[in-house]
Amino acid sequence: MTTALLTASIALLSGFQSGAPLRQGAGDLLIAPTRIVFEGPKRTAEINLLNTGDKPATYRISLIHERMNEDGKLDEIVSPGADDKFADELVRFTPRQVTLEPHVAQIVRVQMRLPADLAEGEYRSHMLFRAVSSSDAPVQAAAAGAPAKGIDIKLTPIYGLSIPVIVRHGALKSATELSEVRLMKTPEGAPVLVGKITRTGNASVYGDVWVEFAPKGGKFTTVARANGVAVYSSNSIRNFAVLLSQDKAAHFEGGTLQITYRRQDADGGQVIAKSTVELP
Image 1 (cartoon, rainbow, N blue to C red):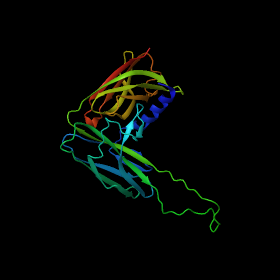
Image 2: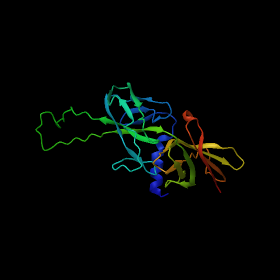
Image 3: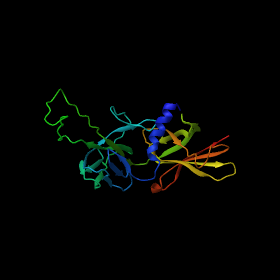
Image 4: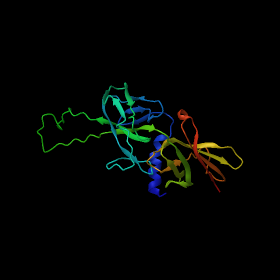
């Protein structure tokens, strides 16, 4: 893994170090849960939105198609592939736009409907929450009563955040392995564990990456954790890079690093894949 890829992977995982089922983005918007999965008898879901800012905010909600690359970055799909399966035709939601007062919550209700002739598989779209800028605020002159000079351009950032909406239908399965796991250092000299999550089958996997260290003859201690790491059904490989805590196990020499990729507690906590690295 090159230095550039290492830095990018660390940045993508850095937002998933806490276990809280909330995600902040689109300005001052908190969203929970961070993913919706319809499978078995489940047909409805609720998404909680909270404006943590001190001003009213408006968000437009839509379904888009996104593809994840091997480093976990999501990009909107411009040209769908033959094997892409999207969920936008299978789910409905309301409302499609919300205005939240400061510290006020709102529920978005999502409903899934399965056509009788739907082919088995995993279908995924992403629900996008995009901040709507205020368009009714007039541009102020630099000084009251000053004559206009030229063109005044005002740039307003537009924030957006998406969460996956997944529909699983039929007999789905997956197999997962951890490979090429090794200890590296960042350009600043901090220890970081890198590797690949390899997935096969027709179902995505989702869980937390736990890293534990044990000195020779000692007990394992958790030295890093990255929560909410997904490998979608359209991906076979996901690179990961997890910064290790030097406070809990200085230098990481002469011991064993144990890496476990497992489902989150809310999903049962089962181990998906495991690997070890012996340190000289």
